[in-house]
Length: 475
Image (tube, rainbow, N blue to C red; front, side):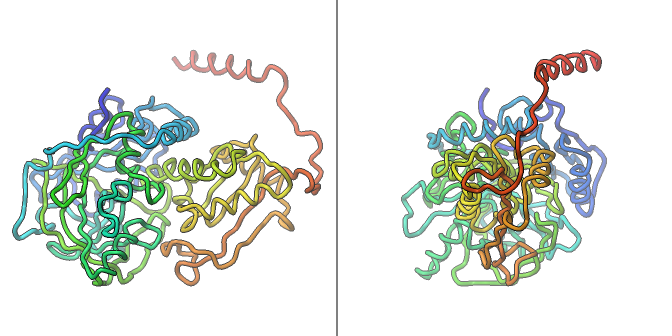
């Protein structure tokens, strides 16, 4: 089966698998879209995407949300059976990730070239904009893939960046953008401003769901998102080389061409963030949009985010843990699995074997020095290799029985953290914590763990037998 190239292709996949709910009744942009996005996330971990077919005041607008908002949807994005559990999805993601780099396919034409607006660009006319949460400071585009190149290394495709950053529409062709220091685009912008130049960018909406996962993924600065997409989807990513030299996803619904203005800053925010808090207003760079391309009858795809869990927590879960796993395992092959699903990796759970006493906390410190851990990984919980970090019941057992607060809580003061962390003080700085919930090994002889309790003989056989009986009873 060919790889999904854009959001409308994936809607067909969702519908075939019973993971798309079409809403035919007329809805208002506010508060209905945001309210529905919040509500669907409260109904469980298997919820469908939502397609709003009739928007009050817009004849041709179609809005879809919650594309990434469940484990079945995430499995389908990966081309896996929709009942694949989280652990299986994680290790399949890692397996494909480790095949990097892939090859890309450059093409000349794309569906989003059907309509072009070059004069009097007015985003309020082009896009069905609305506030996701009632305290948002404006209308946000929060699920776009933004393409930029490093002006100091422009021809290097590996450092071309495709990232997911929030955008506040501030005027007909004026947008605020938040490139925090940990983001690759912030490096590109710094290099452009050192030259006194604007930074050309392309903003795409409605790219493939897997492209959006890659764009929000903490891969290395010199790794290409398009080559990563190719290995994750199992075939070359289809992209369009623009006259400017930038590559744009073939399957997008909208493409906005513009520039981040050099050394211009304006107030941006507040915005209801993935931390479950409003982020406040900050002085941020400004984008001017010069041209807009879009498909005929384009699909607009917002992302609801708020107090976890919401769609963003599924989208930025496995794609956060997998790079951490691969990057850390190069130094410490004893690592078994990494769960960084909680609030985009502000909490990370790592299972590992131990070489010697104190080894687990060294692994925890390595997590904090990865590209993602630098701005996240505020609390790292270390557990034994026998503990499944994706099973919170097992993790809580390890915390309950393996931790002695007198020696197993390692506080690292005044570490960097992303500015959006509401607990930071001052903004962008925090103490970080490693919790060593592993079993002590020599020369660490603390505790009285004795012989660990195992399962009775025949447990595995009975598990299979009972699972079969239960399945037959339901059918």
